[in-house]
Length: 540
Image (cartoon, rainbow, N blue to C red):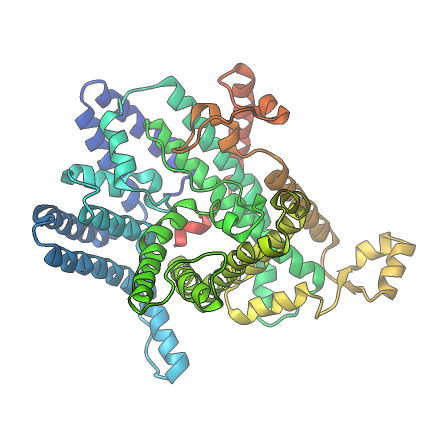
């Protein structure tokens, strides 16, 4: 069941909320139990088999967690073995459903093994659920979670606003909220929740989906070996970057809004990443909870292990500004690249995702290296921040757009075809209808090497205009977290000290003006649902 569907908006969410509020007025326990039942229905809507696949995993993980809690610190060695077994079980569960076919394809490609590809239907949200279960086991083993019941665990794992595509939440940030939630109608929660939901719906259906329909054929043509001109390649690259930006931003807003209707605040997962001035900053803004998970459970343990090993061998075990190249490579570059390789594999089973993860790992390493080198060649930090900010922003933006081609392309060859087009290998082309209307300027462009193309001039102009509008919205306007900051739309979001003039003017308030404006946004979003498209991150 999609958030951006009539059945969810009109047939599922309203009765679930109504029963939740009615039960909450009498019994919080009954209301929370109802929320678990509604989450199971939501998860099983597409395929009831999803429940039969995910339920055993939930039960096994709960059993492992209970055993870890019981043995506690009385037998650390045994507890560690149990934890490793639980993590391996979850990874194998995820690996079978998500990577078995890719593994067989890779063996065929490398060894010409001729293995028949296993057709496995991927359970919805398996990547997100698996990471949450692993984090729960690690936290129980570390003593960060001491008390939990099966109902609390089921509510944590199955809470439907975040079950399919995140955010990846921690038990200790969610369960305290459920324990104090009133489970009753609250005017502020409902107002903020509805606003977030329809902002997200508008981003998805009005901003993301239309540009997706434009750039889809360009990626298909590139994958089939059709060269793309300079303009078409950049339309494809910029168009998909903006499509996934507003698609994921829209989903995050909708998830935040739905959870808020139940009195729950989810953590921030998306915070204007295209405004970042470094790749490090980009990953602190894009899929924030995934970055948090990868840092806490993969990068840091790997780094600590390498530091201990280097210390045992008498080598420098700390990263400093004076660190040698070997220390930088051993303690930062290797963990970073391996962590981003995991990120790429987590996003999808395919060569393009692996290369996308490795590319971002290399970009992060370059960014970290520059942070170490820059003070030596440009010691005035204030001057650097003032003068280099535009170049840093542009370099980060272009790096992200360049990498996103891999994320969208069905094949590595298709991505390479588009990259060649982006640097002008296949020349520049413009629809003949546009060149003919440019008069002498069109003739000059032809003399400069711009070839007339038989593509639609209307499509070209429309795509360019839409990309311009989306860039303006993403880069110049405040995001929804900033608009609703006074009402803490997500965990970790607090009102800014002194908002700018634009933000003071447009900041969300429960007023008649905002009610009318939101009604228009909601109507436009709902009327745009004629042709449904799933959220891009639901496939992960």
